[in-house]
Amino acid sequence: MDLGRNQTKERAESIVPMINVVFLLMIFFLMTATVAPPAPFEVAPPMSDVDQPGEAGRTLFVDASGVLAWSEHRGDAVYGALAGAGLGRSAEQPLLIRADRTVAGSVIGRVIARLARGGITHAHLIVARR
Amino acid sequence: MIDVVFLLLVFFMLSARFGLDNAIPIAPALSGGGGYTGAPRLITVTADGVLLNGTPIPQTELIGSVQALMPSEDAIIVLRVRGEASLQTLVDVLDLLQRGGINNTVLAE
Image (tube, rainbow over all chains, first blue to last red; front, side, top):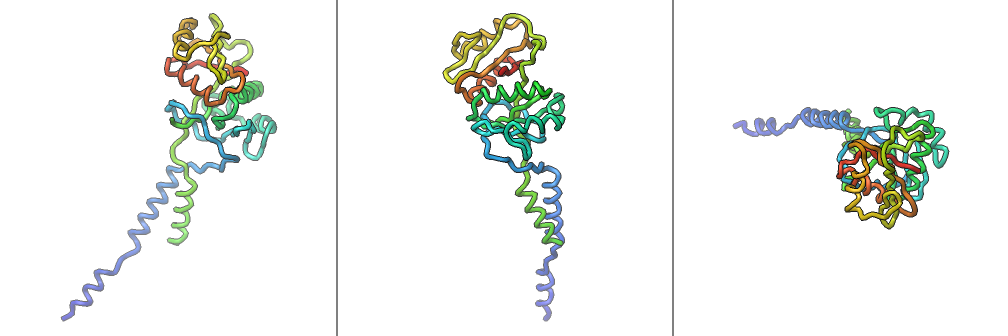
């Protein structure tokens, strides 16, 4: 009788299918993901019913106290940096603004007006789904 | 190699953000009017409520009153924020206008 050997042969598992699955998952994540740079501070966008996906791109952050952040620039220095960024000058490349919902609305009005004086007239405000 | 692939997989799973955020376009009120015609349509958003051309107005009547002042469907509406009104309040008013079919809003300082 030589039953034992056959049974052990069947149990031997190949690692190749698992590698295939892992590769598949990795390709899936590579294709679908947008790797976003970390936010300079915690921002909770305002809630809205709007269901209109915005563009992907670099974002101007405004925190609850009205402090601006654009890459490594903070405060009023962002306007100079934004002038050279070339964003917000056409509808195809709007400037994204992620502002906290508790920030004073007048701050956003001032930011929009100052950006417009610098030629940045196309801005999109990021909102959260209600 | 499989270790590296796993590591990459975990990295992408953790750093990925799926889907794009919703966004509403916010246009500035440009000097020179930018094609503004017709009667003044200035909505002032305050923490206590909404004013149309300086007169307090209930939010339920806002759409009808604004539309009565619009010479065309895509006429410009000027919005401004005064006082302590938060961004959420402004977005709520923008939502309200959009539900009423008023999309061409500009934000003044």
